[in-house]
Amino acid sequence: MNAPKIEILTMEDCPRTAETIAFVRSVAAELVPESPVTHTAVKDEGHARRLTFSGYPTVRVNGACLDGRRDHDAPPTRKPYGDVTLPPRWLLEAAILRALAPRSYLFLCVANSARSQMAEGIARSLAPADVTVASAGSEPAGVRPEAVQVLAEIGIDIASHHAKSVDDIPPAGVEAVITLCAEEVCPTWLGNAHRVHWGLPDPAAADSAGDLDAFRATRDELKRRLTVLFP
Image 1 (cartoon, helix red, strand yellow):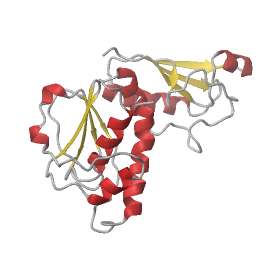
Image 2 (cartoon, rainbow, N blue to C red; image 1 turned 120 degrees about the vertical axis):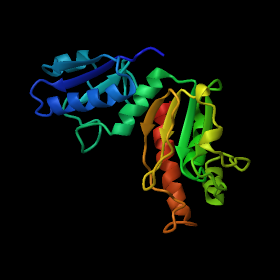
Image 3 (cartoon, rainbow, N blue to C red; image 1 turned 90 degrees about the vertical axis):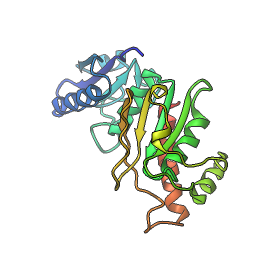
Image 4 (cartoon, one colour; image 1 turned 60 degrees about the horizontal axis):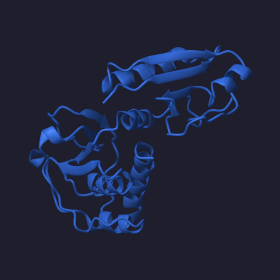
């Protein structure tokens, strides 16, 4: 996997340029320490059009905006990441992983009963046919019927899934690991793989167990992120 090229574009007088550069370089250093990160100061609207500037700031990985689009021209005053100036960390991580194009993914949480199972199902539905997707947990339990139900609502069948132990996953076959724990201590992965952490609340926790809306919220957030990862 070749190191992706990461570009940062900001208006010349942007007061948060240093913060943006530090943030992007910090995230990139964790995933791909060897990846070049460059910065360009946009001088005026004509310069912005020539660079297909997407608003302040613009961050691109291998020439594509973080959401995967290319040649995305927009007014220089636009905020491409909503009301926040910096892109969400998960969005930058997803864009870098997309550029790295791992051939195998592993989703981890503790019980492998809800979040990681839904992530596996959604990822399988989006990933290219030659990409392997799996999930596991440090304390595997049965797959939650609510997880099966809310994925069936969007046409994804995980009824045949079963919970698996992280100890049963051969490390040599995994190129990217995404941990999903929020309140708990996530399983430790000792293999050589790109790692990111997307902490999401457990819809199977005691205070939301049986609440389909909690499972739907987790499903929708996973789909939002994985659609960026597998556009």
